[in-house]
View 1 (cartoon, rainbow over the protein chains, first blue to last red):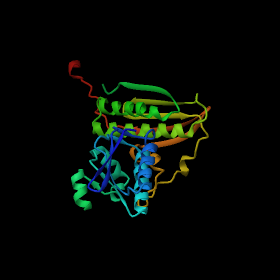
View 2: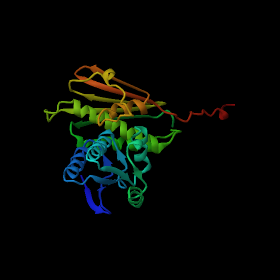
View 3: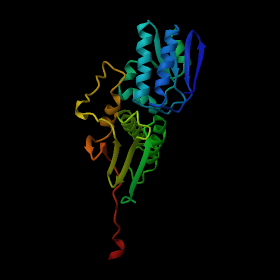
View 4: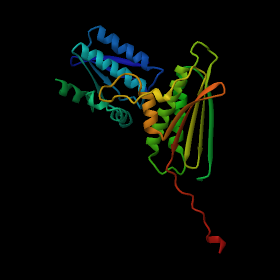
Length: 112
Length: 153
């Protein structure tokens, strides 16, 4: 899976450089996030601007990251969701679990 | 033409790398379906999702240890009815035992069948010959065919 990790304003920003998150690559996404949390990177923003499609396994990978970060008193938030992707969070009501920001600046300001 | 028939049959190995191909077929169909009155973009996403989830299910329930195992996917659209059949050769499962997810206490798994049930009109899982078949039906809001009788006065 094509991912980029940057440290910005004290956050680990994980850029998903794929148009699609499905059962083919969601396992790798989940492992990457869990590895970050194990390394102490517990405040994570997942940047989803490139993502046009996410399935149940992709939502599950993000939820897994959210729960593991929360268990260590950290946080996993989302930024830059396309409308179709946002509608998946709404359909599953996961929009009530995740903080979802329009862009990274809004995420930094809200989380500060 | 409202009377046109679309039939697509695809056979893939039980490997998740082919999910993109299957999902893309659904997306294209949703975008390009003539005479569909609803939101083409929404239908495209729904078909992409439902085909991806159904194929994932079949791959996972299929014979993982047999590299020659395949999943067959059949899509049929005629008039108002969209019919998807996904055939696997695994142990099968009891669809009735798949409960609705508790969305107030979200868990990582169990959302695939929820999406199919929520977005489509009917779902069944039956045994047919040597395969299991997940059959999904969605009724589409199609433009009515208007017959022109004006030249037959």
